[in-house]
Image (cartoon, rainbow, N blue to C red; front, top):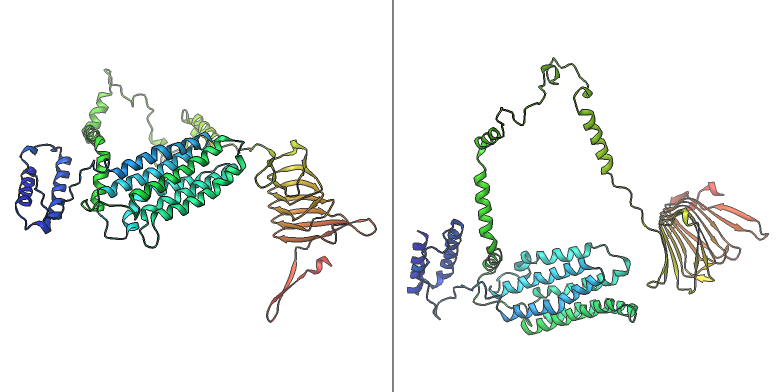
Length: 510
């Protein structure tokens, strides 16, 4: 019996000092016997007759660490306080900013570090490289951080996302062993990068939004709390238990202690499932039980398929599907379902607003219903960004602005005075631009159909940079005030020289 084998091994370990070198092997045998008892439902039987091995200072440690030892360790209790006092308030601050998903993923990453600390409390220092040994247990943390990177947040939360990702970098302290760097120094560097972005948030929302300031305070509290915790309990790296189990055995024990309460329930489910599977005989008996007193069953009333209706036989006469009752209705429902399955094209709401961050006017998703849009420029640092607009005219009023960008636009007209940097057209079609003042550079990229109107002042100062574009023209007044229109070349002749390649405009434009 299993319990008799266990008693024999335990007595041998307690009486003989010669088995000291084999003690780890005997311990693993005992653990496997325990696992067999648990799987067979014999756990707890004949335990009164078992003899526990005696501990002596001369013997090698058995590694029999209680499963709840990690839960009662001061380092783990201190980390729980850090989660409760620092990480939980930060998650709440994220929820207050409608960033609940960000807070939940961040908390999951910190919870993953808790498992590694609990694992270190009951295991020995691994002999192999530390990152390699801990890699399987870092997967939950990596998954949480990957989910944070996948979040599609509004542009106003760019700095928040960067600050959180920089802060999450310090979770790698569990892999740091001096030299050359200590975990504390590593954490401080990562936290400094996070504070760089949170200070931008503070500067923009100071005195305007207390929730934003609370987010920055919570982020700083998490960093300070983690540094204090690592300084006290893991100053020279993740602390392991010299008398603990090997890292793989400790991981199994720790996971078993978490999943053990649900094991009895899963066993019952397995038994009930296997009991219900009786093969073909049980299926036939179940079908027989479905019959009514008059012998009817689920197949009663079905139409018999004759030889002439079986398509694989020679007698098949090629009947139309309409002769089969209900077939036409089925076809209609299928086609309607397929058309209903197509998702309607999502239409974004139009935007025309000024954003303090970047000093940018944003005009997006405007259509011909908007008509004429007017933008007032009050500072030369401001710029205009026009995205995904169609059949719209935008008039930019003001003496001078930094730049204008048109992206993914169609049949859009833009009128402006002077631009300091450039006017860019990207991925657009049928665009018209008019500069009543000076524009040093027009950049045209992947655009089909572009007409640029220059003023007399800008004619001699403006340059054009084009790539992958066609149907480009420029209109300007000559010295007599008469407007002329010239095409911007699309075709070039290239020649290979001895040391370089030369390019000339095609004769079509001369």
